[in-house]
Amino acid sequence: MLASAAAAEMAATVLLAPLEVLKLRMQTDAAAAARGAARTLLHISRHEGLGALYKGLAPIAMRQVPYTMSKLVVYDQVARLAKSACVGEREHLRPCAIVLTGLVAGAAAAIVSHPADLLLTRLCGSATASTATSVAECVIADGVLEQARYLMSLGLRGAYAGLAPRLAMTSVMTSIQFSLYEWLQMSLGVRPQAEGRNV
Image (cartoon, rainbow, N blue to C red; front, side, top):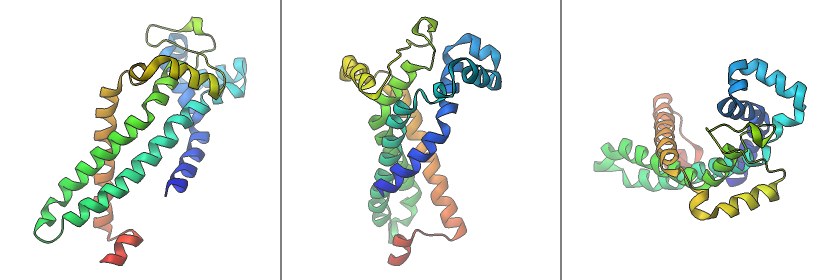
């Protein structure tokens, strides 16, 4: 499960990295925001080269791969326990168990991936650190080792700055995602193979 989650997320990360760079550029650069998405994408490609659209690939992967792996594995393991505890007279507790399982999986994913999310925010995709706005302190770190060194220089407390709102957002979002996922599976009569064998 870990390998399939990692491979799927890495493929998605490679495809979506230019959009993440675009999003960060528009969030932290007033000129990019004024240009709009399509013109900013063209501007980056023409003036900085196509490689600039993949500038944040390492930190995006450092955030997304552990995020997805931990979210799926934690959900899978905790959901098995929760579902087995909600049988018979306790079947009515199953929806609550699914919501709580999603909250736990989202919290795990947020905690595991937060330092890389912070790094990505600090990188912010600006061409030069001098274009940083008050929205974020842009740190241009070329290469994974320099990015890791920067994160370590922040210390544990600095690497987890801003965790509380991200933890709340990710936990609630993941809980909603998995609640809908479970509801759709039940509504469509679809069950995962492992669960179907036990029924």
